[in-house]
Image (cartoon, rainbow, N blue to C red; front, side):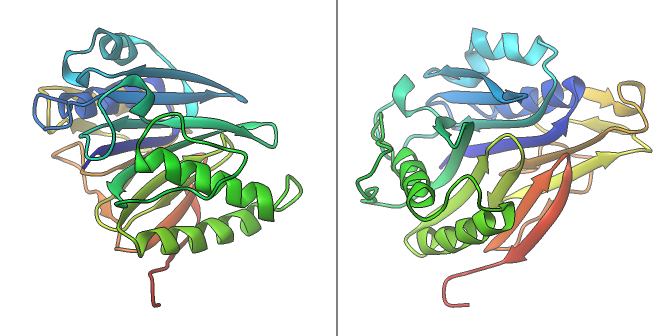
Length: 261
């Protein structure tokens, strides 16, 4: 299994802090040593980094940890391979263009033997995750268009998520840069930091940050992860089948949708 991290409306301090904690789990405090990747939206562009080596020992990860990147949406993934070779092509997050926007996807779980329906989008690597991503985009490209509203797109993503979850473990992060969609079948938790800010201490590294001195009263940042990253904050744990739509650090829609419900 893998670990996921997403941030909505993040500040550079939050990003470096959370990313530092997650990367320690990639071969140091956790077994997820089979590659990692992160994507940051900057307007309609995406700044992406991938490495097939363990994140805890990656020089590229060191650069990201110390580089002050500000992004409204960021998606990160550290991999413990169960389907597909350990190689750059199989590292998440995956990215494709649809309707003039870059869509970024990361997945934690396994759908054994899954194959995407043939269509415009094809996997480059050999993971079930990338096949899922291509299947989602092919479905949207076939059944929707750029004029469909966000609610219509999200309703369809919820139905697709329920169908995938009925075949195995399907924990999802998906963004088009405007919003971030998350779906949980097993493990996912979130925290929203807003004024008055306080200190936080990482679980996987001896690092503490006083967010009050690093933020403004107007800042709002939300972090969504597989497992909580800090020891002194209260995280909100997702229910199985729960989905949330995030925008600018806030949940704007949510629900619970499971197979058979």
